[in-house]
Figure 1 (cartoon, helix red, strand yellow):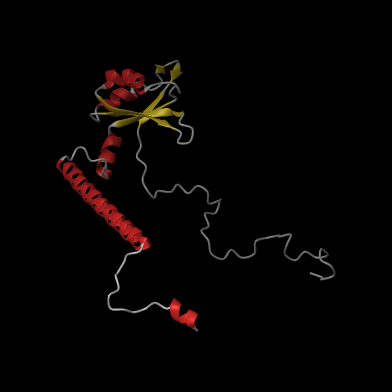
Figure 2: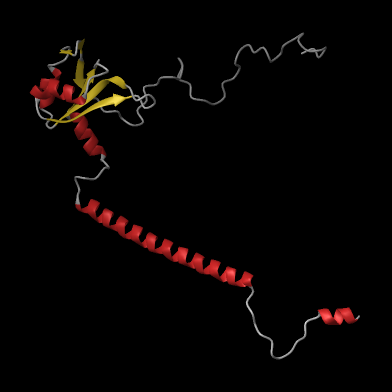
Length: 197
């Protein structure tokens, strides 16, 4: 019983509040975390300011916007030609040189396969004016790098326009189809173990 009394702490009025080393480490850790949070908030404010400045710069410059409207795309398609059977090693500069006599060229686009990165063998040439297309169409079946190229006016794809491919002969679109004909799994007589169906 004397041992129990000696192990219990005495409660005197003059006890000194001491901080354990564990408590000191926790306060340092909390202080470091607060500093990190403050640094992150400062970086976030800087990013917001930069983003606002970039948005103001884009709003002031209408020609530099990356997004094209449907009217812009239709206008570009109206000034463009499709060039087929292009040599795979041809560069846009060579194609531009071939069509230079037709008029001022805005852009030459050689399409490449998205998986391999190799050219597909055709290109688009966009002119500054739609009147230049007639001169470019005159270069149909002309010789470019040892090949006869095909030059036609660029067509515009209409979204949602379906030519009906892939539906079979009847063009049937779902619903109950009725009896589907012979199936080896339905009504197979003599295949089970005496089931009789």
